[in-house]
Image 1 (cartoon, rainbow, N blue to C red):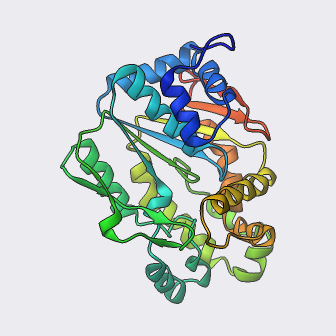
Image 2: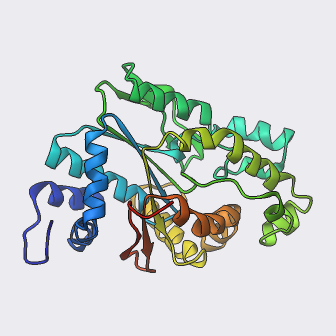
Length: 300
């Protein structure tokens, strides 16, 4: 547990330097994790080797940073080996999505929604890590090129992990009901999915192929955005950070506004239902400050 009067540990300073974060970040995270229910949750993860933790959060909510921080924390304080998987790294290749776009619906060319991931590969990697069949090859996805990297650039995990974390914007999210799919939720769906083919396919994929992975979680944690409207600001911030580390052109604000419409339906659904099914849940302010709203001993 850390308070503002304390000095950050060496591992925390290394983390914020690597992630380009302010000192306030580990202070805020530790203050939130220090409550008994959170300490209990982390203790359960530490004791259940190997354990599988899912972290849900809308685009730009800080789920990747939280996952990385937890990995660094478990390593520094408990000598645990943690592997973090991002659902984003399991997107289908551009060529595979083009086939889906031709055979099922043009909107499936755009990465993001359920149905545009290689869930079979994700499930296999999870099994290989938890049962540990070395070496485990973990794919990586280049968002600036909108394609999976060459297999020679995959990560190779050669040590059995104590904890595996899966983070992503649709992690742990259940499918919608049929009635929820009846009406389009934005201009994109009105214009490009008037008959509902795309959204029904996405929902069917989420129900059939993704839930078996989510059901493997020992725990699900959720970062709950105040509303879908803040996702634009957070996604714009992400894009600008990408631009700082690459010479590849980034999306314009207009392109981002159009892009996130692909995510709106399930993001709004998730904001309503994840607090009901996650073991630990935090409400985020616009600046991503955390307020614990559901503890692990609450009924799910």
